[in-house]
Image (tube, rainbow, N blue to C red; front, top):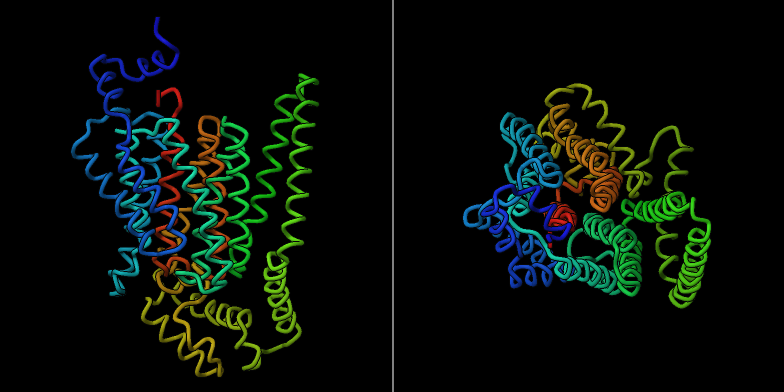
Length: 443
């Protein structure tokens, strides 16, 4: 008599030959997976290593598409969601390509869109042909956990002097946290693995805080909200069985108490963990208060981090309104910022080439056409997360976290101007998808 998992597979593959081919060819080659795991561990320490991981995944996806037969149909839920993401990346790149061609902007500026598209194509190809077994998933998750500790070591030693610009670097690490935390809290795993992955995700959060990248501090809010939602949902689900509820309540209470005690000990032993981010936040508040009390900005005020941003944003809105559809192009934006810095006497503004905001920079360069391209990523991720919540909860929560960090960290910085951001965003989405393959399919 066949097992339930075999029956599920047979329902997907009505042809016995096709089913047997899937069982024989579905496993990921160990050397490929282990190589990717090794590169992921070192990704926070080197932009080149992160790029090598992305490149290997794209090449392996191309090889699989050419050499391995298709096993999963396109209407499989996970495959369908990955196809939707691939279509989004293609649509976003086409819109940006039109604007780039119109203004004769450098094609190298489209590196993030290209990286996302190629990795989305590799994800779609690999999902239809290969899947990770349970042990392979654990290897990959261990790699994410170790990567968070590597990130913590980098930020402890170098502070803001991270391998890439600190803001996109912190955003990239936050994507790993957004995958690791749902895996630790929602997966059916051993307690020691759950505990290890959970504290590894917290190590990633501390790494972000110590990097002094205020734009990525939103990860703290997401961790708190997600953890709260998971605990509340579990209590609601088990409310009919009072014995189970109280047993779990005691387990959660003891776990929370142990976590709080451990956190207090760590914070007391290493006060830098909270002193550094608090000082950064206080500096931003003081700079903002100084600006809000003045009718106009002096050159001293617009030479601060916050002052330069707000001054550029105010001035840029007027320029954006003059060309709302197609913008002014990236060359005109660079020239305009430099002239603004000269006119208003701000060395801080003269030293930058963007508006310290993904949305405003996109609007200035390519108008509404560019904005539709940028927002299509967020809209698609939100739709995929909502659509897959019942069948692939871990994937959905990971995507929600990454969407939150993508939008919030891009409010005050141009993450799309950095190679590392595009690489880490693409890698994280790939990992989230392949980790979510149905257990009944991966026998």
